[in-house]
View (cartoon, rainbow over the protein chains, first blue to last red):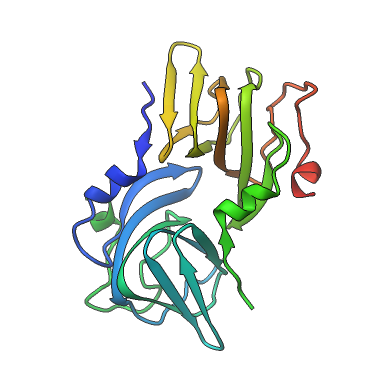
Length: 121
Length: 121
């Protein structure tokens, strides 16, 4: 029995900022719901692209030489290995698509770093 | 220079039913925008999952032993190898996520079958 996931309902499970929850899977990629506010940390994911889709609010993704502003309904793929830092002035809801093996904050480990185990709980 | 894609604008490029257009990429998966009306054809994608996310309208995905109804904001991953047939009573907009190597109608070839080259144009 296959059953659909309602995106808005999936966000109900997300209670903390910067703590993505796995809400779906397609092939080796995970779909994750995250609520963001403030900024994360500069990091990169070597060998792995990461897609951000803004479901609600607005998100700035800082890169070393530019910043890209996303509003509701926009998506952007951060290419593999590119250092970036997501910043949300106000609460922002994003859908992330990235490989199951992607580490939350790349090789940077901070108090905001979440393991995949935490993301599945 | 990275620039975001606006999902609604991406659908402006889709002028025909059942003719997905590639609008993004993350790792080896393509994001495609498609407008559906009527039904496609029974098919399966061996070794490849396919995710349907309903952006507008409603979609029924028929399976051999059940049917799943998706409304706006719902998504469902059709697992690898599972025969399915998408049916839209009224015009429906979907975002598809599937590997770059996925064939539009699996091994079934009909007048509605689109090549990846057509999907990129």
